[in-house]
Amino acid sequence: MKVSAYLTSPSAQLGLAVGILMYGSYGLAHHAFGKTGLIALCAFVGVFIPYYSKLSNKLEELVNLRSARLSLGRLVRFLPQLLFNIGIFLALVLAGVFPDSSLDALGGVLGIALVTTCASQGMQYLALAMANREIGDKNRNVLIALSTNIVVTAVATVGWPWAKTAFITFGIGFGLLFFAVGLLSDWRSMVFRRGGVGVFFGTFNPTHSTHLALIRDAIKARGLKKVYLHCTTVPKLHAQALQRGEIRISQYERGMRVYETTERADVHVNYFPTGRKFYEYETRLAMMQAAVADAGLSDVVEVLSLPEAYDKGGFYAVLAHVKRLNKGQAVHGIHGSDLGGMWVRGIYDESGWIYPYPVVRRDKVSATAIRNGATGLTTRKVEQMMEALR
Image (spheres, one colour):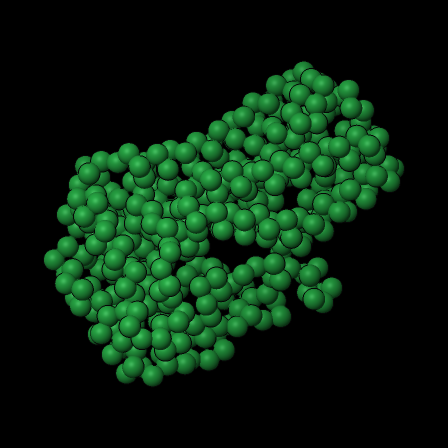
């Protein structure tokens, strides 16, 4: 990896900004700017944070894939940061930035690490939820969240009574937000109101047999009278990266746009979690309609096409449209346990009292394999459409 590519990546710049802010906050609060241990610790934090973030994301994805339980994934994300923060505060004490006794009122190293981890996780969740709704930028929102948490924690270690109260209230409040949303979501997936309608969102690149099986199972298990499908136009991750010049369309192949990263790409970001090849929106829409008809589900499944609403407000806007059409009806959100499915789960949770219908992915059906020529994994009409595009 080139040093210049690392230093110019948004993730690295975010990490360095956090390290600098940490140095300034603790240095100012405890008159410790000259402490070699503080300088070394903050430099380590600044460089390590992007790698820690990738590791946390990967652990959460693995747990989600095997359980489809939001609260378990969040617990797995929480525990490594708790251990990391325990190490940070132990290092601050050993570096002589402040004495161990100054943390007694906050529950010692374990207590302050626990509270600051709760606050950090909750604030990052809120920051990302706001970015998903086009309120601010993802990296900027996370930076503000982390910065606020660092400053509040640094002030709390000074020992002022009001700072202690604010810190504990701050941490517990955001911790409850973070875990309560996940626990309530998992509860709604098990204790639900039968009937109403279902929604199923994704890339559908293309629609395959597992998608159709999920729809049939949800209709039967939840007693749904209708299921609405909608696919992405251009996935938000790609749309933003294209706008920033971090990825580009290298070629068109068999009706698909093929992406590649550019020299401006963030080395810490996985731009293609579901592959580099994407059928155009109109093609995926036609394949969805063909698959639904092939499966004999046209009477209970409606394929929506709201590209303007999606481009403006994403799946939040599409879900709002469905709720307007079915006022007073229970809405059930169908999703798999893969990365894309759990992203959609987050949208369901942020859009009101939606009942998730999670399904752990255990089959071998792969949209990537289908795009690469595998047969027998989707319906006949979809395979014929793909063959025509080849």
